[in-house]
Amino acid sequence: MAGFTGNDLNVFLVRLRFVFFADDTGAWEKGLFSEFLETRRAEDGSDLGPLIERAFRVLDTAAVEGEACCQEDHRPRDERASSLGSRAAAVSQIRTSCSPAGCPASLASAAAPGSRVRVQGVISMLYQDLQGKTAVITGAGHAQGQGAASARMLASLGMRVLVTDRHADLAAECAEGIVSAGGVASSMRVDVRDEAQVSAMVAHAVSTYGRLDVLHSQAADLEILADPGDPDITQVTVEMWREQFETIALGAFLTCKHAIPAMVENGGGSIICTTSISSLMGEPNLTVYGSAKAAVNQLVRSVSAQWGKRGIRCNAIAPGLILSAPGLAIGPDLIDQYARHCSTGEAGTPEDVAHLVAYLASSASKYMSGQVVQLDGGFTSHSPMLAEQQSTGLIVGV
Ligand SMILES: NC(=O)c1ccc[n+]([C@@H]2O[C@H](COP(=O)([O-])OP(=O)(O)OC[C@H]3O[C@@H](n4cnc5c(N)ncnc54)[C@H](O)[C@@H]3O)[C@@H](O)[C@H]2O)c1
Image 1: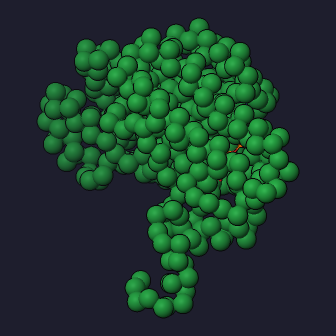
Image 2: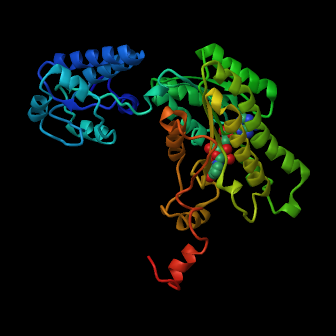
Image 3: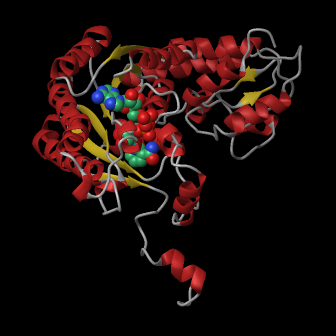
């Protein structure tokens, strides 16, 4: 399987969804792709050529025997081929999607050295509008963090991503990872508390990539939550208050302030701020963190109201517990306790957030603005007494 790696496969499978068939020549399938590409170009100017070329390179070096079909109906190859009838029908059939989860599994299970794989071809329409657009993400340095997961997700969907963090080395590492996986990314050290740096970040994105379409503003200093902590209000100092508000609220304000004019230049864009469910309810601690995040919820509504007619959508994601490094650092007992109070029975992952970021970035969410979306496994959606009621059986129910 020279030249073929699982990573290569994952990269393009995220972007392209294929139906694989063993075939004698493969020329017919490649022809279909070319035809499909021409149709896309004629319709909306999409240029997926480089992506397809990459897919063919991977597939040509892949050694796969037999049929590895990930199309939902799993019909045998001959039946499917005859049902397509003509090339024209097949080109329209290409638009059908198939389960991406099935692709790596079926390809891997069918792999055998020396045989050939041929492509009949499905190109994902999912979030296709993001192809070639530019995103800037703040606080995206930590490899296990939500920002880095979102950077990887947006890059895998064809976006050009400027990865920023106050830690230059971490941001660079994240961008390098994206580039080595075949994506387009660069990095920059940006402290969101500094207006000059935020302004330079936006200017850099525009000068490097020609436009700015998506801002994901999500930097927060979670180290403060561990040391010195964020205690009850009588213990909070003015310094603690200022520090948290500077990164979370001032940072969100500055990034929106500078991104909006650049986005309006291109007819608009999507801003996604990350807040927290701590902005929506009282807790024994997190006094300052919750208050600062609540300020961002209101900022999102203001941006949406003021700039919606100029093409800017602005939403917030309010995650519950997410198992990034700071989430994992609270320890197994608190993680278990959180999971017990979740409808889904488990804490979230950075990738869960990244999926919502992709949706909010894309025009798939074009009717959504000014919202604070709780992404918390149902943690905030039920009676606080639910877990107790279920364990005591005092109320008849599930
Ligand atoms: N992990 C959770 O359970 C959880 C829950 C709700 C909300 N959130 C929010 O999600 C976002 C991402 O957090 P995470 O869990 O990925 O943690 P993380 O620590 O990996 O990410 C935060 C990033 O922000 C960067 N940062 C801190 N101060 C900065 C500054 N002044 N300028 C620029 N960058 C700065 C850090 O270096 C870090 O890379 C944060 O906004 C956090 O408040 C996290």
